[in-house]
Structure formats: structure tokens, C-alpha cells
Amino acid sequence: MKLAVLPGDGIGPEIVAQAVKVLEVLNKDGMKIEMEHAPIGGAGYDAARDPLPEATLKLARAADAVLLGAVGGPQYDTLDRPLRPERGLLRIRKELNLFANLRPALLYPELASASTLKPEVVAGLDIMIVRELTGDVYFGQPRGIEMRPGPDGRAERVGFNTMIYSESEIRRVAHVAFGIAMKRGKRLCSVEKANVLECSELWREVVLEVARDYPEVELSSMYVDNAAMQLVRNPKQFDVIVTGNIFGDILSDQASMLSGSIGMLPSASLDENNKGMYEPIHGSAPDIAGKDIANPLATILSVAMMYRYTFADAATADRIENAVKKVIAQGYRTADIYTEGCKKVSCNQMGDAVVAAM
Ligand code: NAI
Ligand code: MG
Image (cartoon, rainbow, N blue to C red; front, side):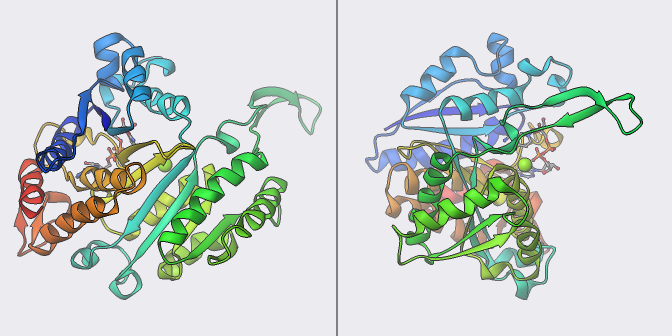
């Protein structure tokens, strides 16, 4: 299996190095993962004046999967938009046609006190949000800011975007979500705003059509405003949630906070053939970069997702996830999840602890 490793900026290289340690353990056990590193984001700009250098994109295309750290940093904030690190990330997602973004929100029992919600509301939380990633109002045309006549007849500025989904786009992400629901608790909640938006009305209809292929999955629909409320009122009612790009952007960030630290949460972005890009949901954390204190578990758990979804190897995914559960149970904590009485460890030490647990 060929893996493109793109550490990126800030804490990216530190956390990715820990995930690579895990992959090396698997290689020792006979997995045959060929890893090749390449720059992206600010590192791509530094190396080739391009946040997604041609060679990096080529490597990513040829690989079976991509492991990404994070991109961005204050030193790049003054660059023109097309040269900014974040643009490299948007482009690689688009170029690889990664339309299904999977974001689990899972609470480790030992970290319940890190959540801002009452422990009994979040204890045992294990939900998966499937967010469509390549359509919706973020990409729809027409879009822009232009002058139009205002109420008093004088021209004023008007900003506009277009929320748009085709049935094929809805269908393919719905299939991914139903497929995941089949492997989990067989409950899927489709989130939209069909009471006011035609785009959502179509979404609801197409998801209902796809549901006929998955009679074992219990499908429900929920308006996004209610879903936002239910996610903090009683998040454990959910198993899998499927939603469009903008609703998913907001709900998945909201759900991530239910489980304590941003340093614990992995993600996957998949294409039609389950090729995927795997990355922690957090950014490059410039405030702690280079200090060896970042939490590498989100990145290590992203490797577990890679085994589950791209390599269809659930046993190895479980092995990695169980090792993470074990180090948490053993009391190892990086600074972001540290509480009194636990063992405070560095980024490197956390990586070593996971390797030992494996
Ligand atoms: P951030 O996620 O980088 O950091 C937010 C806070 O969480 C910071 O206090 C940081 O120290 C902490 N944090 C993040 N990851 C951590 C980890 N693994 N262990 C311990 N603490 C961690 O978000 P922020 O500060 O808004 O953005 C910083 C830079 O990252 C910006 O340039 C932004 O554009 C970029 N960014 C990149 C993303 C990506 O590559 N996917 C996603 C979000 C932001
Ligand atoms: Mg977001």
C-alpha cells in the first residue's frame, strides 16, 4: 500500500511523526506500507512557492491514501489568497474528489470531565457525522458581491451565494452514510432544512430513495436548527448523521466539543472508491508548535480510520484504537487533556506509549 505523508506546518510534522511510528510497527508486523513524504501548505509554499506543489499532488494521486498533519501559520497570513496554506488543503480535497467527510465524535470515559457538558449527558458518546464536502453553498454559482438598486432606489452592495446539490451528489454521500450506519448502530439521521429550502427538499427525497437499498437502517430526518439543539440536549440519541457541506461544517465542530479536546479527534475524507485523506480535525496550533507538547492521538486515530475505510482492515483499525484506549486508561495525558493525578507526557512520549500499547 502506498501512503502519501503530508506533514504540513506548525505541529503537523510533530504529530505526523508519531503516526509514522505506529505505521512502522505495522510494517514490522508485515503490513508493507510504503511511505513517501511531501510538502503541503506553508511547507509547500516554502519549498516551491505553491501550497500544493505539482509533485505533491502527483504523489497523492498515485497513493492509496493520504495522511495529512495540518496547514497554516501566522507567517503566511499576508500572502495572496491563492498562495495561502489553506488553499492547498481545499485544492487537494477538490482534486482528489473527496466528497464524503467522516468525523467521529467519541468520548473516552476517562476524559468525561474534559467535556463542557454534564458527564451523564456525554458519557459513552459515540456518533459519526458524515458531511458532504465538495458541493453546497461553498461552491455554488452564481456567487459574488455586486451593486444592485436598494429600497431607496440608490445602488447598494449585495452579497450572494447559491446553495446547490444535484441528486447524484446527494445519492453518493447518502450511500456512504448508509454503509457506515450498517457497520455501526444501524441508525441514520439526515439533517437539512426542508421546511424552507428547495435544495433541502431534494436532499430529503433522494435520501429516502437511497434508504430503500438499506432496509435494515432506521432513517430519520431532522431540521438543522433542531439538530443543533438536540446535539447538546441529548447527543447520545444519534448514531450516524448525514448532512450537506455547510450544515456539516457547523454541526461537526459543535459535536467535536462534546468530546473534550480537539487533539483527540480524527477525520477521513473519501472518494467514490474509498480512497481517502486522513487528518486530525484541528489546525497547525502555531502557539504550541515545536515544543513537543501537542497531542498526537487525533493523528494516530486518523491512521486507524485509514485502515477501517480505505484498507478495509477493521482488525488493524481496532488494534490502533485499542492501543489509544489503553494509554488513556493508563493515565497518559498530553497537556491539553491533563488533569490532576495523571501522567503528563510529551508528544513523543505519547507516540511511544501508543507503540508500547500496540
Ligand atoms: P488550531 O486547531 O490550530 O488551534 C486551536 C487551539 O487548539 C490552540 O490553542 C491549539 O494550541 C490547540 N490545539 C490544536 N491542536 C492541538 C493538539 N493536537 N494538541 C494540543 N492542542 C491543540 O486552530 P487555530 O488556532 O484557529 O488555527 C491555527 C492555524 O491552523 C491557522 O493558520 C488555521 O488556518 C489553521 N487551520 C488548519 C486546519 C487544517 O489544516 N485542517 C484546520 C483549522 C485551522
Ligand atoms: Mg470548520
